[in-house]
Amino acid sequence: MNIPHSEEETREILSLLGLSSLEDLFSHIDPSLLAAPKNLPDPRSEEELRAYFSELAERNRKLVCFAGAGSYDRIIPSAVWSLLERGEFLTAYTPYQAEASQGTLQAIFEYQTVIAELTGMEVANASMYDGASALAEAILMARAIRGKGRRVVISSSVNPLYRKVVRTYLQGYGDEIEEVPYTQEGTTDIEALERLLKDGEAHALAVQYPNFFGYVEPLREVGELASRYEVPFVVVADPVALAILRPPGEFGADIVVGEGQQLGIPMNFGGPYVGFFATREKFVRKMPGRLVGLAEDLEGRRAFTLVLQTREQHIRRERATSNICTNQNLMALANLIYVSLLGKEGLREVARQSVSKAMYLKRALLELGFEEVFSGKHLWEFPLRRENSLSLWRELLKRGYMLGVPLEEFYPQLKNSLLIALTEKRTREEMDRLVYILERELL
Image (cartoon, rainbow, N blue to C red; front, top):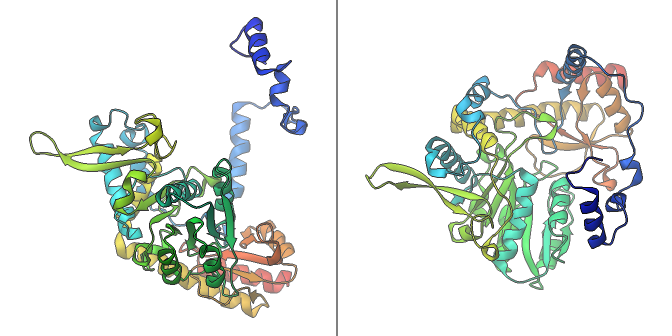
Protein backbone atom coordinates (compact mmCIF):
# COMPACT_ATOMS: atom_id res chain seq x y z
CA MET A 1 0.00 0.00 0.00
CA ASN A 2 1.49 3.35 -1.03
CA ILE A 3 0.75 6.17 1.39
CA PRO A 4 2.32 9.65 1.70
CA HIS A 5 3.40 9.12 5.35
CA SER A 6 6.54 7.67 6.86
CA GLU A 7 6.36 4.49 8.94
CA GLU A 8 6.83 6.53 12.10
CA GLU A 9 3.97 8.88 11.21
CA THR A 10 1.76 5.93 10.36
CA ARG A 11 2.47 4.27 13.74
CA GLU A 12 1.69 7.53 15.53
CA ILE A 13 -1.65 7.96 13.71
CA LEU A 14 -2.63 4.34 14.36
CA SER A 15 -1.74 4.73 18.04
CA LEU A 16 -3.97 7.81 18.34
CA LEU A 17 -6.79 5.82 16.74
CA GLY A 18 -6.25 2.83 19.00
CA LEU A 19 -5.40 0.57 16.06
CA SER A 20 -2.53 -1.83 15.57
CA SER A 21 -2.36 -1.95 11.77
CA LEU A 22 -3.63 -0.27 8.62
CA GLU A 23 -5.76 -3.34 7.93
CA ASP A 24 -7.74 -2.55 11.10
CA LEU A 25 -8.98 0.61 9.39
CA PHE A 26 -10.89 -1.58 6.94
CA SER A 27 -12.04 -4.31 9.33
CA HIS A 28 -15.68 -3.23 9.00
CA ILE A 29 -15.67 -4.07 5.28
CA ASP A 30 -16.66 -7.52 4.04
CA PRO A 31 -13.35 -9.36 3.44
CA SER A 32 -14.63 -10.68 0.11
CA LEU A 33 -14.77 -7.09 -1.15
CA LEU A 34 -11.14 -6.50 -0.21
CA ALA A 35 -9.80 -9.64 -1.90
CA ALA A 36 -7.84 -9.24 -5.11
CA PRO A 37 -10.02 -9.89 -8.18
CA LYS A 38 -9.68 -13.33 -9.73
CA ASN A 39 -9.89 -14.65 -13.28
CA LEU A 40 -8.83 -11.38 -14.87
CA PRO A 41 -8.13 -11.64 -18.61
CA ASP A 42 -4.62 -11.30 -19.99
CA PRO A 43 -3.35 -7.76 -20.66
CA ARG A 44 -4.40 -6.27 -24.00
CA SER A 45 -2.97 -3.60 -26.23
CA GLU A 46 -4.69 -0.27 -26.74
CA GLU A 47 -6.06 -1.36 -30.11
CA GLU A 48 -7.33 -4.66 -28.71
CA LEU A 49 -9.07 -2.85 -25.86
CA ARG A 50 -10.63 -0.37 -28.29
CA ALA A 51 -12.01 -3.24 -30.37
CA TYR A 52 -13.27 -5.01 -27.25
CA PHE A 53 -15.16 -1.98 -25.94
CA SER A 54 -16.51 -1.20 -29.39
CA GLU A 55 -17.96 -4.70 -29.50
CA LEU A 56 -19.58 -4.17 -26.07
CA ALA A 57 -20.98 -0.83 -27.19
CA GLU A 58 -22.43 -2.43 -30.30
CA ARG A 59 -24.37 -4.87 -28.11
CA ASN A 60 -25.85 -1.96 -26.16
CA ARG A 61 -27.04 -0.18 -29.29
CA LYS A 62 -28.98 -3.26 -30.39
CA LEU A 63 -31.15 -3.35 -27.26
CA VAL A 64 -34.67 -2.00 -27.83
CA CYS A 65 -35.71 -0.51 -24.50
CA PHE A 66 -39.29 -0.69 -23.22
CA ALA A 67 -38.16 0.12 -19.67
CA GLY A 68 -38.07 3.30 -17.63
CA ALA A 69 -38.25 3.27 -13.81
CA GLY A 70 -36.51 6.65 -13.65
CA SER A 71 -34.28 6.50 -16.75
CA TYR A 72 -35.81 6.85 -20.22
CA ASP A 73 -34.62 6.23 -23.77
CA ARG A 74 -35.81 9.40 -25.52
CA ILE A 75 -34.91 11.09 -28.79
CA ILE A 76 -32.17 13.67 -28.31
CA PRO A 77 -31.82 16.25 -31.11
CA SER A 78 -28.24 16.21 -32.39
CA ALA A 79 -27.99 19.95 -31.80
CA VAL A 80 -28.11 19.43 -28.03
CA TRP A 81 -24.73 17.75 -27.78
CA SER A 82 -23.23 19.61 -30.73
CA LEU A 83 -23.76 22.81 -28.76
CA LEU A 84 -22.96 21.30 -25.37
CA GLU A 85 -19.55 20.07 -26.49
CA ARG A 86 -18.37 23.51 -27.55
CA GLY A 87 -15.24 24.41 -25.60
CA GLU A 88 -16.73 27.33 -23.69
CA PHE A 89 -19.37 25.00 -22.22
CA LEU A 90 -17.58 21.67 -21.96
CA THR A 91 -14.42 22.97 -20.27
CA ALA A 92 -16.04 25.53 -17.98
CA TYR A 93 -16.08 24.58 -14.30
CA THR A 94 -18.24 25.94 -11.51
CA PRO A 95 -18.09 29.77 -11.46
CA TYR A 96 -15.94 30.50 -8.41
CA GLN A 97 -15.27 33.99 -9.77
CA ALA A 98 -18.91 34.12 -10.63
CA GLU A 99 -19.43 37.55 -12.12
CA ALA A 100 -16.58 36.97 -14.58
CA SER A 101 -18.60 34.10 -16.03
CA GLN A 102 -21.57 35.98 -17.48
CA GLY A 103 -22.33 33.37 -20.14
CA THR A 104 -22.39 30.54 -17.60
CA LEU A 105 -24.52 32.56 -15.21
CA GLN A 106 -26.98 33.52 -17.93
CA ALA A 107 -27.40 29.86 -18.93
CA ILE A 108 -28.08 28.93 -15.30
CA PHE A 109 -30.55 31.81 -14.96
CA GLU A 110 -32.47 30.66 -18.05
CA TYR A 111 -32.41 27.06 -16.79
CA GLN A 112 -33.88 28.19 -13.46
CA THR A 113 -36.64 30.02 -15.36
CA VAL A 114 -37.55 26.90 -17.36
CA ILE A 115 -37.73 24.75 -14.22
CA ALA A 116 -39.83 27.32 -12.36
CA GLU A 117 -42.30 27.51 -15.27
CA LEU A 118 -42.55 23.72 -15.65
CA THR A 119 -43.15 23.11 -11.94
CA GLY A 120 -45.40 26.10 -11.30
CA MET A 121 -43.10 27.34 -8.55
CA GLU A 122 -41.68 30.79 -7.89
CA VAL A 123 -37.97 30.02 -7.75
CA ALA A 124 -35.61 27.23 -8.82
CA ASN A 125 -31.96 26.68 -8.01
CA ALA A 126 -29.05 26.07 -10.37
CA SER A 127 -29.63 22.25 -10.24
CA MET A 128 -28.72 19.32 -8.00
CA TYR A 129 -26.69 16.16 -8.54
CA ASP A 130 -29.62 13.92 -9.49
CA GLY A 131 -33.29 13.31 -8.73
CA ALA A 132 -32.64 11.05 -5.72
CA SER A 133 -30.36 13.49 -3.89
CA ALA A 134 -32.71 16.34 -4.82
CA LEU A 135 -35.52 14.54 -2.98
CA ALA A 136 -33.33 13.88 0.06
CA GLU A 137 -32.28 17.55 0.15
CA ALA A 138 -35.94 18.55 -0.15
CA ILE A 139 -36.81 16.40 2.88
CA LEU A 140 -34.08 18.11 4.90
CA MET A 141 -35.33 21.50 3.75
CA ALA A 142 -38.90 20.59 4.73
CA ARG A 143 -37.55 19.58 8.12
CA ALA A 144 -36.04 23.03 8.54
CA ILE A 145 -39.25 24.75 7.36
CA ARG A 146 -41.47 22.83 9.78
CA GLY A 147 -39.08 23.24 12.70
CA LYS A 148 -40.69 20.47 14.72
CA GLY A 149 -41.86 16.88 14.41
CA ARG A 150 -39.99 13.60 14.21
CA ARG A 151 -41.57 11.87 11.21
CA VAL A 152 -41.10 11.84 7.43
CA VAL A 153 -44.14 10.59 5.54
CA ILE A 154 -43.36 9.30 2.05
CA SER A 155 -45.54 7.38 -0.37
CA SER A 156 -44.45 3.81 -1.12
CA SER A 157 -45.18 4.63 -4.77
CA VAL A 158 -42.14 6.97 -4.81
CA ASN A 159 -39.16 5.51 -6.69
CA PRO A 160 -37.72 2.86 -4.30
CA LEU A 161 -34.15 3.91 -5.07
CA TYR A 162 -35.01 7.50 -4.16
CA ARG A 163 -36.50 6.27 -0.89
CA LYS A 164 -33.25 4.44 -0.12
CA VAL A 165 -31.27 7.64 -0.62
CA VAL A 166 -33.66 9.49 1.70
CA ARG A 167 -33.07 6.85 4.39
CA THR A 168 -29.32 7.22 3.97
CA TYR A 169 -29.50 11.01 4.31
CA LEU A 170 -31.66 10.80 7.44
CA GLN A 171 -29.64 8.15 9.29
CA GLY A 172 -28.06 10.65 11.63
CA TYR A 173 -31.22 12.60 12.46
CA GLY A 174 -33.17 9.94 14.33
CA ASP A 175 -36.35 10.64 12.37
CA GLU A 176 -39.05 8.06 11.77
CA ILE A 177 -39.74 7.31 8.12
CA GLU A 178 -43.29 6.13 7.50
CA GLU A 179 -44.24 4.82 4.06
CA VAL A 180 -47.84 5.23 2.92
CA PRO A 181 -49.28 2.17 1.14
CA TYR A 182 -50.70 2.36 -2.37
CA THR A 183 -54.24 1.44 -3.40
CA GLN A 184 -55.60 -0.87 -6.09
CA GLU A 185 -55.60 2.17 -8.36
CA GLY A 186 -51.82 2.31 -8.06
CA THR A 187 -51.77 5.61 -6.16
CA THR A 188 -51.23 6.76 -2.57
CA ASP A 189 -53.82 5.63 -0.02
CA ILE A 190 -55.36 8.95 1.10
CA GLU A 191 -57.00 7.53 4.23
CA ALA A 192 -53.76 5.92 5.40
CA LEU A 193 -51.94 9.16 4.66
CA GLU A 194 -54.28 11.20 6.85
CA ARG A 195 -53.83 8.78 9.74
CA LEU A 196 -50.08 9.39 9.61
CA LEU A 197 -50.51 13.18 9.59
CA LYS A 198 -53.13 13.55 12.31
CA ASP A 199 -50.85 13.61 15.36
CA GLY A 200 -48.85 16.59 14.06
CA GLU A 201 -45.49 14.79 14.23
CA ALA A 202 -44.81 14.83 10.49
CA HIS A 203 -42.32 17.42 9.24
CA ALA A 204 -42.30 16.36 5.57
CA LEU A 205 -44.68 14.69 3.13
CA ALA A 206 -43.44 13.40 -0.24
CA VAL A 207 -45.23 11.88 -3.24
CA GLN A 208 -44.26 11.31 -6.88
CA TYR A 209 -46.17 12.71 -9.88
CA PRO A 210 -46.67 10.53 -11.89
CA ASN A 211 -45.49 7.93 -9.41
CA PHE A 212 -42.98 5.12 -9.87
CA PHE A 213 -45.68 2.90 -11.40
CA GLY A 214 -46.57 5.63 -13.91
CA TYR A 215 -49.93 6.52 -12.34
CA VAL A 216 -51.09 10.07 -11.72
CA GLU A 217 -51.37 10.79 -8.01
CA PRO A 218 -54.38 12.77 -6.67
CA LEU A 219 -52.26 15.82 -5.90
CA ARG A 220 -55.24 18.01 -5.01
CA GLU A 221 -56.29 15.67 -2.18
CA VAL A 222 -52.71 15.18 -0.98
CA GLY A 223 -52.09 18.93 -1.07
CA GLU A 224 -55.24 19.63 0.93
CA LEU A 225 -54.12 17.21 3.64
CA ALA A 226 -50.64 18.76 3.74
CA SER A 227 -52.20 22.20 4.13
CA ARG A 228 -54.67 21.05 6.80
CA TYR A 229 -51.95 19.53 8.96
CA GLU A 230 -49.35 22.20 8.09
CA VAL A 231 -46.82 19.74 6.73
CA PRO A 232 -44.38 20.90 4.02
CA PHE A 233 -45.45 19.20 0.78
CA VAL A 234 -42.70 17.77 -1.48
CA VAL A 235 -43.46 16.51 -4.98
CA VAL A 236 -41.09 14.44 -7.13
CA ALA A 237 -42.18 15.40 -10.64
CA ASP A 238 -41.53 14.06 -14.15
CA PRO A 239 -40.44 17.06 -16.30
CA VAL A 240 -41.92 15.69 -19.54
CA ALA A 241 -45.20 14.83 -17.84
CA LEU A 242 -45.42 18.43 -16.65
CA ALA A 243 -45.90 19.42 -20.30
CA ILE A 244 -49.39 17.87 -20.21
CA LEU A 245 -50.26 17.72 -16.49
CA ARG A 246 -51.14 20.64 -14.24
CA PRO A 247 -48.01 21.71 -12.33
CA PRO A 248 -47.57 20.74 -8.66
CA GLY A 249 -47.45 24.40 -7.71
CA GLU A 250 -51.19 24.61 -8.42
CA PHE A 251 -51.88 21.93 -5.80
CA GLY A 252 -50.04 23.56 -2.92
CA ALA A 253 -46.62 21.96 -3.33
CA ASP A 254 -43.95 23.69 -1.26
CA ILE A 255 -40.97 22.01 -2.95
CA VAL A 256 -40.85 20.31 -6.36
CA VAL A 257 -37.87 18.17 -7.34
CA GLY A 258 -37.10 15.62 -10.01
CA GLU A 259 -34.68 14.10 -12.48
CA GLY A 260 -33.78 15.99 -15.65
CA GLN A 261 -32.35 13.02 -17.59
CA GLN A 262 -35.32 12.95 -19.95
CA LEU A 263 -34.52 16.46 -21.18
CA GLY A 264 -31.67 15.80 -23.58
CA ILE A 265 -29.42 13.43 -21.59
CA PRO A 266 -28.70 9.82 -22.64
CA MET A 267 -29.30 7.00 -20.16
CA ASN A 268 -25.51 6.68 -19.73
CA PHE A 269 -25.68 3.57 -17.52
CA GLY A 270 -27.19 5.75 -14.79
CA GLY A 271 -25.28 9.01 -14.99
CA PRO A 272 -24.17 11.71 -14.94
CA TYR A 273 -27.71 13.01 -14.50
CA VAL A 274 -29.10 16.25 -13.12
CA GLY A 275 -31.64 16.95 -10.40
CA PHE A 276 -33.93 19.96 -10.47
CA PHE A 277 -35.17 21.78 -7.37
CA ALA A 278 -37.86 24.45 -7.12
CA THR A 279 -39.69 26.03 -4.22
CA ARG A 280 -41.74 29.01 -3.04
CA GLU A 281 -39.97 32.34 -2.75
CA LYS A 282 -40.68 32.59 0.99
CA PHE A 283 -38.54 29.48 1.55
CA VAL A 284 -35.63 30.53 -0.63
CA ARG A 285 -33.27 31.10 2.32
CA LYS A 286 -33.64 27.46 3.30
CA MET A 287 -33.03 26.14 -0.21
CA PRO A 288 -29.82 24.13 -0.84
CA GLY A 289 -27.37 24.82 -3.63
CA ARG A 290 -26.94 28.11 -5.42
CA LEU A 291 -29.20 30.63 -7.10
CA VAL A 292 -28.38 32.98 -9.99
CA GLY A 293 -30.17 36.32 -10.18
CA LEU A 294 -30.48 39.20 -12.65
CA ALA A 295 -29.23 42.62 -11.62
CA GLU A 296 -27.69 45.78 -13.11
CA ASP A 297 -24.12 46.99 -12.98
CA LEU A 298 -23.09 50.54 -12.11
CA GLU A 299 -23.72 51.63 -15.69
CA GLY A 300 -27.22 50.20 -15.79
CA ARG A 301 -26.36 47.21 -17.94
CA ARG A 302 -27.93 43.79 -17.38
CA ALA A 303 -25.70 41.62 -15.21
CA PHE A 304 -26.09 38.09 -13.85
CA THR A 305 -24.82 37.28 -10.38
CA LEU A 306 -24.83 34.54 -7.78
CA VAL A 307 -27.31 35.82 -5.23
CA LEU A 308 -27.44 32.80 -2.94
CA GLN A 309 -24.92 30.14 -1.93
CA THR A 310 -25.93 28.24 1.17
CA ARG A 311 -22.92 25.98 1.60
CA GLU A 312 -20.71 26.31 4.71
CA GLN A 313 -17.76 27.15 2.43
CA HIS A 314 -19.46 30.42 1.56
CA ILE A 315 -21.38 31.35 4.73
CA ARG A 316 -21.22 30.62 8.46
CA ARG A 317 -21.55 26.89 9.10
CA GLU A 318 -24.49 27.24 11.45
CA ARG A 319 -26.44 29.02 8.72
CA ALA A 320 -25.63 26.54 5.95
CA THR A 321 -28.60 24.58 4.62
CA SER A 322 -26.71 21.78 2.89
CA ASN A 323 -23.26 20.49 2.06
CA ILE A 324 -24.03 20.39 -1.67
CA CYS A 325 -21.14 22.36 -3.07
CA THR A 326 -21.93 22.94 -6.73
CA ASN A 327 -24.47 22.14 -9.46
CA GLN A 328 -24.63 19.85 -12.49
CA ASN A 329 -23.97 22.77 -14.80
CA LEU A 330 -23.24 20.92 -18.04
CA MET A 331 -26.23 18.59 -17.69
CA ALA A 332 -28.47 21.50 -16.70
CA LEU A 333 -27.36 23.26 -19.87
CA ALA A 334 -28.33 20.14 -21.84
CA ASN A 335 -31.81 20.44 -20.30
CA LEU A 336 -32.01 24.09 -21.28
CA ILE A 337 -30.89 23.52 -24.88
CA TYR A 338 -33.31 20.58 -25.26
CA VAL A 339 -36.32 22.52 -23.97
CA SER A 340 -35.36 25.60 -26.01
CA LEU A 341 -35.16 23.54 -29.20
CA LEU A 342 -38.50 21.81 -28.64
CA GLY A 343 -40.46 24.66 -27.11
CA LYS A 344 -43.75 24.19 -25.25
CA GLU A 345 -45.57 22.48 -28.11
CA GLY A 346 -42.62 20.23 -28.90
CA LEU A 347 -42.40 19.03 -25.31
CA ARG A 348 -46.15 18.41 -25.28
CA GLU A 349 -45.81 16.39 -28.48
CA VAL A 350 -43.10 14.23 -26.88
CA ALA A 351 -45.48 13.51 -23.98
CA ARG A 352 -48.49 12.89 -26.25
CA GLN A 353 -46.61 10.46 -28.49
CA SER A 354 -45.31 8.58 -25.45
CA VAL A 355 -48.83 8.17 -24.07
CA SER A 356 -50.25 7.13 -27.46
CA LYS A 357 -47.58 4.48 -27.99
CA ALA A 358 -48.01 3.19 -24.44
CA MET A 359 -51.71 2.63 -25.09
CA TYR A 360 -50.98 0.86 -28.40
CA LEU A 361 -48.53 -1.63 -26.87
CA LYS A 362 -50.60 -2.11 -23.74
CA ARG A 363 -53.67 -3.17 -25.74
CA ALA A 364 -51.59 -5.65 -27.71
CA LEU A 365 -50.07 -7.18 -24.57
CA LEU A 366 -53.45 -7.46 -22.86
CA GLU A 367 -54.69 -9.43 -25.88
CA LEU A 368 -51.77 -11.84 -25.34
CA GLY A 369 -52.88 -12.61 -21.79
CA PHE A 370 -51.05 -10.01 -19.75
CA GLU A 371 -53.12 -8.45 -16.95
CA GLU A 372 -53.26 -4.95 -15.53
CA VAL A 373 -51.88 -4.66 -12.02
CA PHE A 374 -53.68 -1.42 -11.15
CA SER A 375 -56.89 0.29 -12.25
CA GLY A 376 -55.86 3.96 -12.10
CA LYS A 377 -54.85 6.39 -14.84
CA HIS A 378 -51.29 6.29 -16.13
CA LEU A 379 -49.27 8.07 -18.80
CA TRP A 380 -46.51 6.18 -20.65
CA GLU A 381 -45.47 3.81 -17.88
CA PHE A 382 -47.52 0.97 -16.42
CA PRO A 383 -47.05 -2.48 -14.81
CA LEU A 384 -48.49 -5.64 -16.34
CA ARG A 385 -48.61 -9.10 -14.80
CA ARG A 386 -48.33 -12.55 -16.35
CA GLU A 387 -47.32 -15.95 -15.02
CA ASN A 388 -43.60 -16.62 -15.54
CA SER A 389 -43.06 -13.03 -16.72
CA LEU A 390 -39.46 -13.09 -15.46
CA SER A 391 -38.67 -16.00 -17.79
CA LEU A 392 -40.27 -14.10 -20.67
CA TRP A 393 -38.24 -11.02 -19.73
CA ARG A 394 -34.99 -13.00 -19.88
CA GLU A 395 -35.84 -14.63 -23.20
CA LEU A 396 -36.74 -11.27 -24.75
CA LEU A 397 -33.49 -9.79 -23.49
CA LYS A 398 -31.59 -12.46 -25.42
CA ARG A 399 -33.45 -11.31 -28.54
CA GLY A 400 -32.57 -7.63 -27.98
CA TYR A 401 -35.77 -6.43 -26.28
CA MET A 402 -35.97 -5.14 -22.71
CA LEU A 403 -39.63 -5.47 -21.76
CA GLY A 404 -39.80 -3.33 -18.66
CA VAL A 405 -38.29 -3.72 -15.21
CA PRO A 406 -39.21 -6.70 -12.98
CA LEU A 407 -40.92 -5.24 -9.92
CA GLU A 408 -40.47 -8.11 -7.48
CA GLU A 409 -37.03 -6.87 -6.41
CA PHE A 410 -38.56 -3.61 -5.16
CA TYR A 411 -42.07 -4.81 -4.30
CA PRO A 412 -42.10 -8.53 -3.34
CA GLN A 413 -45.91 -8.49 -3.40
CA LEU A 414 -45.83 -7.66 -7.14
CA LYS A 415 -44.35 -10.94 -8.26
CA ASN A 416 -44.57 -11.65 -12.00
CA SER A 417 -45.11 -7.94 -12.72
CA LEU A 418 -43.11 -5.92 -15.25
CA LEU A 419 -42.98 -2.11 -15.19
CA ILE A 420 -43.16 -1.19 -18.89
CA ALA A 421 -42.43 2.26 -20.33
CA LEU A 422 -42.82 3.75 -23.79
CA THR A 423 -41.25 6.88 -25.18
CA GLU A 424 -41.63 8.78 -28.43
CA LYS A 425 -38.49 6.97 -29.64
CA ARG A 426 -40.15 3.57 -29.91
CA THR A 427 -41.53 2.84 -33.38
CA ARG A 428 -44.60 0.89 -34.42
CA GLU A 429 -42.34 -1.62 -36.14
CA GLU A 430 -40.43 -2.24 -32.88
CA MET A 431 -43.67 -2.73 -30.95
CA ASP A 432 -45.19 -5.02 -33.57
CA ARG A 433 -41.99 -7.07 -33.74
CA LEU A 434 -42.00 -7.46 -29.94
CA VAL A 435 -45.60 -8.67 -29.99
CA TYR A 436 -44.82 -11.05 -32.87
CA ILE A 437 -41.92 -12.64 -30.94
CA LEU A 438 -44.09 -13.07 -27.86
CA GLU A 439 -47.04 -14.52 -29.76
CA ARG A 440 -45.18 -16.81 -32.19
CA GLU A 441 -42.08 -17.83 -30.26
CA LEU A 442 -42.51 -17.48 -26.49
CA LEU A 443 -46.18 -17.85 -25.53
